[in-house]
Length: 262
Image (cartoon, rainbow, N blue to C red; front, top):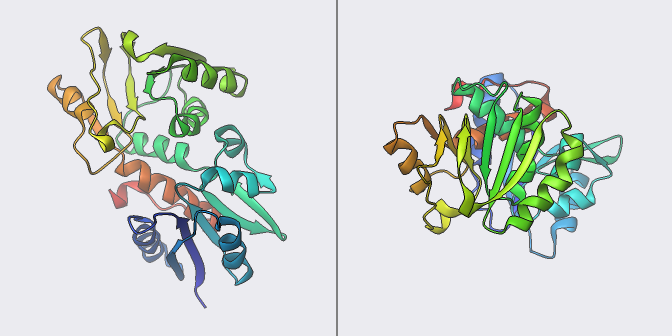
């Protein structure tokens, strides 16, 4: 009987996870079935318990349930503890485990582009959950300085205060979006600007050599501005595939090659 996996969210129709995991399974010869589960906004816990009580092996979690998943787990990986959000669930010895693979997905996507992260200065625009989830893996991969820019400076400063102890080997700093300036190896847009259609202005005083847009499939003024400067860019599809591959590895013990699926 094939192993059962699922992704849970609300809404869930847009999820690409089933097609990705079925593609990984075909490549690695693993027999699995991966489905979408729409949970009521007040029914996350019951839906997760139902899935695992009926023999489910692993579950991905998408919006708006990542924080609820974090609260529900009895065992958390270090990166999940730092992210304060969980996107990957499994049961081991009767205990619910949680991990956050988003940051590793970003790191693997950047490596698949043949961009180096070693000894880099990185600017991340936005101070929400997406940023919190990627700081630790970026530093583990070699980033030496990460500056977080946010419209509300206090939010970026709080994030830096929260994470500083988790990444003592790197320098973290916070700036206001109005003070964008300096030289960076990589700028990451972790805001929802491309999804909301907002324009993010990158001033001439901001110099950088690579640009990564976490969102994908939508026009991005961030990408447009970087390309106008002839800077190498990428949107977030690779990160989506990368986080899925990392979940697949946790559950199945095999890590497909990201480049095979881009």
